Image 1: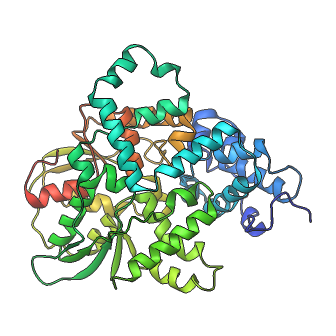
Image 2: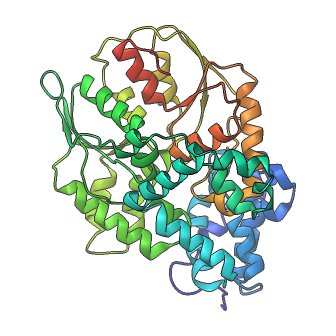
Image 3: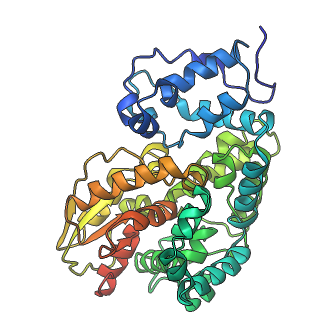
Length: 429
C-alpha cells in the first residue's frame, strides 16, 4: 500500500483503526472548542492521518497546519470510551511533519530561536536579564503606551507578554546540590532542576527541596545543565529529544537514586515516556524503561509518603488548575488535590471546564498565539469565577500562561509552594 508517511515510525494502522469516530473527544478538545471545525478535533486529525497513511492526501503544508494546531493536551485520550491512543498517534506524526513539511522562512527562524534559547538555562538567564532591564527601565511601559507592541507580529507579542516577574537575585540563585533530611533518610531522591524552571521558577525548586527534605528525603539536584528533551519531543524534534533523553538518563544514573522527582508536568510526562521513546534502541531500551519506572511528580511522591512534617494552617481559598501533562499524560489528578487538602484551613475549589487546556502546551503559546490567547482568557475567567485567594498549578508553562491573563491581584503558585508554606508556618505569598 502506498503511503504519504516516510518509513521512520509512521502511525500504526491498528492504532488508527481504534477510532470509531464517535465524537466523545470533541467537547474536551481546546481547538475544537475555539473553532468548531471538524479538522481541528482529534477525530478529524485522525481521519487526516488515516488518509495520509493510505496515500490519499500528502504530508504537506495543509496537513501540517492541522497537526501543528493541536496542543497535545491529551484530554481526548482520557475522554475516549474506545481507548484510542491519540498520544501515540500525535507523537508519531509530529516528527513526520518536521521532516517532510517545508515551513516558511519566518516560521523556521522563530522556532530555531525558541530551541536555541529555552533548553539552555545559561542562555535563558542572559535573555532574562535583558527582559528585566526592559521591564525595569520603563521601556516596556513606553512601548505599550505608544502602542508599538500592537504593531509587532503575534508571536513576538506573545513572547513579550510572557516575560515573568523575576529579580537579579532570583536569576543568580542556585539550588543546593545536596540537601539532607533532619533525621534518617527514607529515600534518596533526585530532582530535575529543569531549564526554564531553574531560571524563572527557582523558588519552586527551592520549595520542592525543602518539602522533600522535611519529609525525610535525601535530595540531590544534579548540577548538569541538561535539558530533558520534553520541548523537543512534544514539538516533533525527535532526534534532538532522544539525544537529550539519553543524556538525562546518564545524568541521574550516576547518583544511585530511589526516585527521580519532577515538579514540571511536561518534563515529568516525558521522563515517564523514555521507556517507550527508546524502546527501539537496543542499547538504551532497558535502561530507559528502568529509569522511567523511578519517576514521580512531586505531588505524586508526597501523596505516597506518610506525612512526617507537621502542617500549619494556611487560610486560603485555592483554585487548582490541572496541568494537562499531569492530569492526562501522567494520570495524576487526585494526588495533588489530596496533598493540598491535607493542609489545615485550606479550601480547595472546583473550577469549570477543568479539562480544557490553558493554552500553554510547551511552545504552543509562542507558535500558535491567537488560539493560545483565547484559551488563556477562557481559563482565567473560569479560575476567577470561584473567587480564589490563590491559583495553583503544577507546570511552569501553565504558571506563565495563567499569570498572563489572570487578575494581577491573584497570585499563581505551584502546589508544593503551599505545602512548603504550611510546613514552615509562613505566608505562601
